[in-house]
Length: 174
Image (cartoon, rainbow, N blue to C red; front, side, top):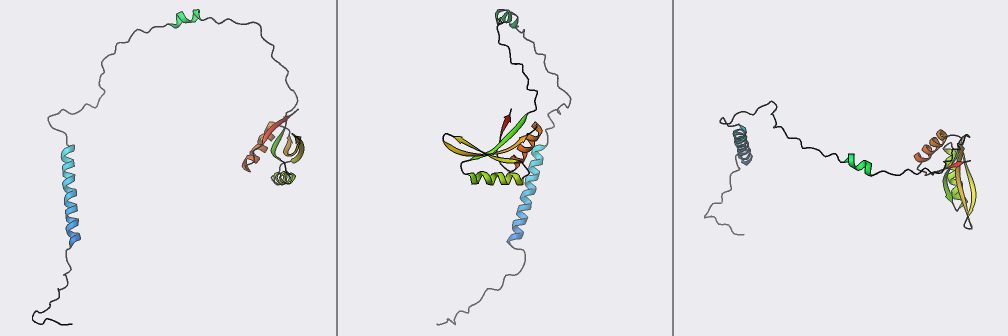
């Protein structure tokens, strides 16, 4: 490659370290923020020509109350509902015996599934049994928890089943 010796080739001297573009940017940024602060102060200062606002309560003008019409004095006597004296006697028999409950935790067509659920309920500390029932010509195996002697026992058993994410149907025994 040929070289031109008539014109000396000069390389640029390295840039001297000193204030660069960042310093100019920072100076402009600070100056702009200061000007914005001064303008905000100037806009927020109240005018001297206007009186200061009162801090106390302001008296409101009195409002004239309109006369109210009370129509119910006329409506009630006109809307009399006849009372029928002929009514059926309610069944006042009270079951004096204790309430016994059973919780149905599941119903399966496969006896193995019912047995697995029964085993998990026994491990949870619940008394579980399987009852075979024929519905529409097909055998179903119901997993029953109980019998439970009181409402408190039933609620406790339902809570345990709910914690295990097992839905149970309460059935009252006679």
